[in-house]
Every structure is written in C-alpha cells, then in structure tokens.
Image (cartoon, rainbow, N blue to C red):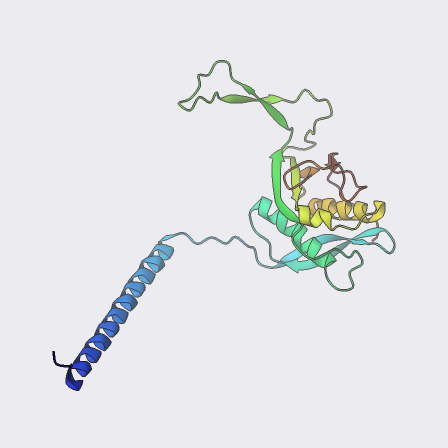
Length: 233
C-alpha cells in the first residue's frame, strides 16, 4: 500500500470545501424560501390593531399616608378587546404601586392572571330533559335564572360582572392590614369603574379559587359594587 500523495490530500480537501459551500447555499436558499412563504402568509392575513393609540386613562391611586384614593390621569395604550383591556388597566395600576416613592408600595410583578366579564344577571345551567345526549355522552344544558335573591343583577342593560383572578404570588406578598388591603381593593374597583362603566359588580378569585381575604383582612368572598371609589379630589 502506498501512502496518499500531497496532491490527493489537496483534492480531498477542496472536494470537502466545495461540498460544505454547496450545502450552505442550499440551506440559505431553503431558509429564504421558507421566509418568503411566511411573508406571503402574513400579507394574506388581515391586519389587526390589538392596541389603541395612547389615550388619557384614569387610574384610582391609593395613598397609605392619608388613606385616600385619588383619580389620576395617565397616557396609556390599551388593548382594544375588553377583557384584555380590563387586565391591562389593573396591571398598569399595580405597576404604579411598584415604582420608587409610591404612596401605596407593593412588590413588582403582575397582579392579575385573567379578568372574566359575565353578563348580568348571573345564571346557572340545568340539564335539558328534552334533548338527547351527543356522541360523547354529554347532555345539553339550558341557562336558568338563579334562585338566590342576592345574586348579582344588572342595573342597566348590558351590565356585567367582572371576575378578577389575582395571582397567588401577588396575594401572598401583599402587605397585611385592614387599610392597606382595603385601599388595594378600592383602587382596583374604582379603576375598572372609571374606564369600563358597563362593569357593575366585581368578584375576586386567587389562582382560580375562592379565598377568604386578600392578606388577612379585606373580604374576597363578597361581590363588590363597581363604583367611584375616589375619596380625594
């Protein structure tokens, strides 16, 4: 057996270089073709504008020093969709409280996992005895009026109940105290009322579950009326 000559090594080297370059060109062409398909797909889809332009928004800001809640205007861009708008309002509110020098200091981080808006009056559901079960064995239900005389009812046509699902991380690190907890609840309710007047009632959950209090004091089991909670002009 004869060892390969230097010329043979050079030939093998350049063949490998050409192969690598050819593969790179092929991968680049494939990537550009894929990008073109994505861009064509994007061009064929209707444009949506999930956020509005910046506009004056009223936040009801709490002050621990004097126990007041004051309406304050901020320029904020908000989602157009109503439930996302409600959540964004509350997130902006809590962000204000996490700023240095806040008069109602809270830990930074998102406070709200989701906001659900339900039409009033709140109704339950009952099995429809006249309907047959579907192929999955599920029997259709029909809405029924609540028999609870204290169930939330609409004051005006289109009135809604807002169910605010707070994050457990926010609740667990919230300061404890009657006033500080009451101010947080009041500022949330007042902020929703100022910007989404169709909300007439407000309920709170924590991580999707009922919880007795915010941090030992403020009641999270009751239904709150949505109202102007400002106490300082």
